[in-house]
Image: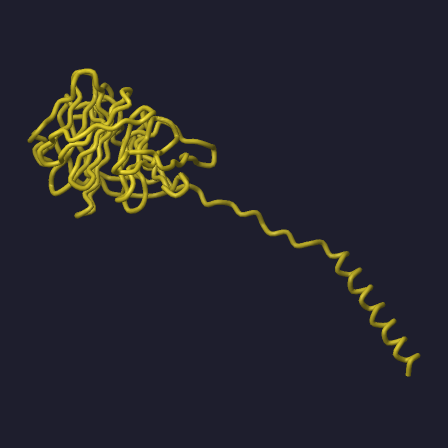
Length: 270
């Protein structure tokens, strides 16, 4: 019995060696590399056109309760305005002191917040009366501004988007906007729409759609056809200004010194 048991153990061990040798001779299975899907590029079509002040060097747009809010730039010509959408008529205006170059705006609760370019100074107004309530400071240039309901989101012309506390305006974090080729710079006017940040890319006809969690790009909007179709003159300045009517799901765009403001809707993606 002992001899038979020993033979059985030896046989099992031999089979184990053979089995292991067979396994070692089989090359490991390598998973196929994951290829990220291409970033979609969307085209939009115009569904409505509204008049826009040709003297307005548009730096920021916002929309609420049927009123278009606009921030304009330029030393000596910077302002914030309440504008009638249908006619383009300025209903109310506050002009900034000449030393300030106005930049982006956003509506937050009962206030209107405005940045300035090189002055490291922002302003908070009562959104109904446009009365100046307070000032705040930041260490970078001021370009675009929006919010996600709990955080102010700000651009400074680089690839970074900063998150600010809406009460203290202290910086609480940032993301760097990027695609597969690296950082995407010149982020300007901002608008928060359905969980994503829409940003004008300065000096281009493009709007980039950004995931605020990690700064990755979820899509591009190509609006070069506005220029090609002759909606505005080549002598006027660049695309800049995004506003969103959350109540009716309408998106508005315009540009610096453009004669028109456009309501647009998605046409295709490729």
